[in-house]
Image 1 (cartoon, helix red, strand yellow):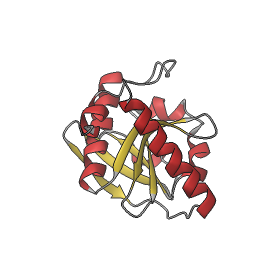
Image 2 (cartoon, rainbow, N blue to C red):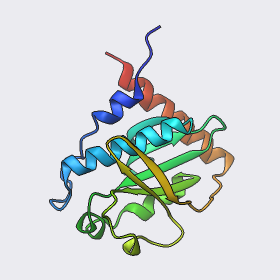
Image 3 (cartoon, rainbow, N blue to C red):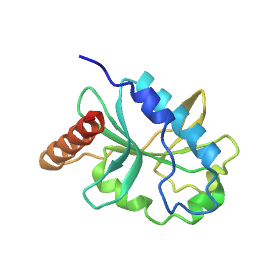
Length: 157
């Protein structure tokens, strides 16, 4: 049985169509790749661009061995963050939420209580821990099934 390389998939993530013009695609791809490498090293299975039940797409979603769900929102610059008012709609679908940014991103603009990952194309580090949330059992099951189905559909030729 062939295995799917999530690292390669993370390398191939492209910003969603209609993304704000302030976003920097090369920077976004590098940050996404580094955050994906970090989460993979931490033991998470990843799905880039996971579609959530509310129709939003999480830049990166991770599922731990214990079934905990992490969502990472990638921000390439201050303008990218300022143009995005949708990130709070991700909070109800994860146990932890992180912003992934480059080293030059001003941390002071990020909301308190949310985690921060600093990343580049080669890796990343958690510099601010994310608040712990706890999904209900029913929501966790539904999200885990969604995660698995979206990952499986991407493997279908």
